[in-house]
Image 1 (cartoon, rainbow, N blue to C red):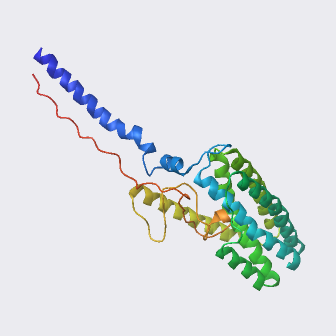
Image 2: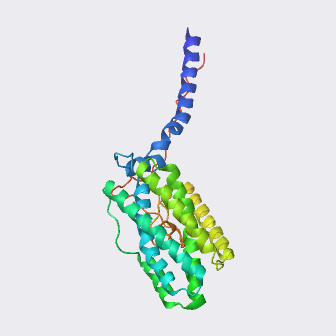
Length: 275
């Protein structure tokens, strides 16, 4: 009888040890500070499906794109010496006239406010275009906008893939078509510096790897700002508002997630005496 009791205690101890190992694995995914927890905390219900912080950020970025590219495109139509750049300007105006109407319709149905002015960085680009002349103007116009569109292309696809909101998904379809058309027509100018684009992409990849490493180790590398958020980013120098600059993450509007905590450690129970 005593032998049976001792064996039973050993079995219980082993079961508790296995449970201690597995429990954090089962429960960590939706703990505070993880991606799933942030997704839930930043989402609001709508008639068209949950609207996440990334969805809202995307809608705002589409509006900001129009605030930059409509005046930039019109300027190209009016000032560009070459037919190719004037044609690119026509595509920007046509594409964002349609896309701007779509994003305002979506925002109205989702009860979202949209910006009415371009960002400081966007205004800076418009000033650069205005100050330049001839070939310098066309080169700046084509390269700044091509690099910006190239970066946003994958992010539009990410929203299209991950959103649970049907209105946002349809808007992403329209944005994807528009961005690809603009990439092609800007490349058709023959002015694109693809070496610079490749170097910029490599630098962005290194920055992303550093940020990922910092998130996994709890450290922040010099010059990189990280938060527990998937690919939502602020418009200050980043690609979602058609910016070729480095990325910076932004928190979900109206939500604050508690700080991340490591999974609780469970100590192993002591084994009972052997008989």
